[in-house]
Image (cartoon, rainbow, N blue to C red; front, top):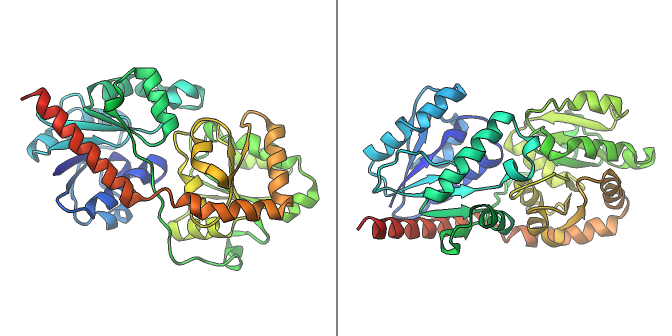
Amino acid sequence: MKVGIDARLLSRQITGIGRYTLEMCGALAKLENISLYLYSPAPVCGENTIALEKASIQTGNWSHNFLVQLWSESYLPLWAKQDEVDVFWGPAHRLPHWLPANISRVVTIHDLVWKYAGDTMRPISRCLERKQMPFAVNTADAVVADSQSTADAVMEEFCIDTDKLSVVTLGTSIVPSIASLESLQQLGIDRPYFLFVGTLEPRKNLARLLTAYSRLPASLKDRAMLVVVGGKGWGGVNISELVSELGLVNHVRILGYVDEPALAALYANAQFLAMPSLYEGFGLPLIEAMAYGTPVLTSNNSSMPEVAGDAGLLVDALDTDSIESGLNQLIIDESLRASLADNAKKNAARFDWDESAKQLVTVFEKAISVRKSRFA
């Protein structure tokens, strides 16, 4: 089976859906009788090609957003046609309009942020999602959602046949070499800590998390500092300024984007992960943390209870008092942390990239069959 893939997100720093694209492609590449053809408007970052040695990668030199949009409706379908792919997969909510009619098409929908938390998006991104997602869902031969929560939202919004929609979850990968807590001192981490991982943008709810943390007694903040990991997003989220205003300079470390070994060490040594997002289609950091036996504090909305399972303490993302109470519980109550940690690895084991890739291939096969029957 020849699989064409929109790989534009592999040409930039890997976060969120880019991580999903990379990991899923790496797992697909291991399977027999699967040939991958990756298409990107700009060169794929060197570090992202290691897992893709068996894939054919075709790239251009377009970086401006407007030019990328042109690329996706011109060169992208042209390259897929030239390679005579059997199925085209859009791993990030989009499908090109001008794919040849004989090529089956599959799209993955991760979330409906534009509908449920649209004010947390860039206006241009919200506009594009509102226009591109309906086209992709309606023209795809098969649609993939990576949580039941997202699948339910897709069904409600687009009223598609249940046979067309499949849930294929994300997986998790563990970096085998784990640094000790002492080794993190070079990052300014000099005592126990809890961890936030995510792009610094409004939807991640970091302002409420910091406010809730600031309300804790000094004795509790001394017992657990907050370490913030994630690249700068949009929306004027000035974390350094907020940390200063809340008097948290001595209790918060802002690390920005970190590499994989550093992130693994941070997950493994954290008391817990704090992810009180306003909305998530899945929430990959949750299972990444749990894979290291690290419990999570997360929101009681969208997909997060589904993913966190019995390894998470749930809070109301819109209620700062609720977040404060959750932080207080997890910092003080060692037995609660231990109980959640006992469940963490078992819960994370539900999510496996290799198994997800096999399920995705089944979806590809179904899409090919649907397309053939339609154009027989």
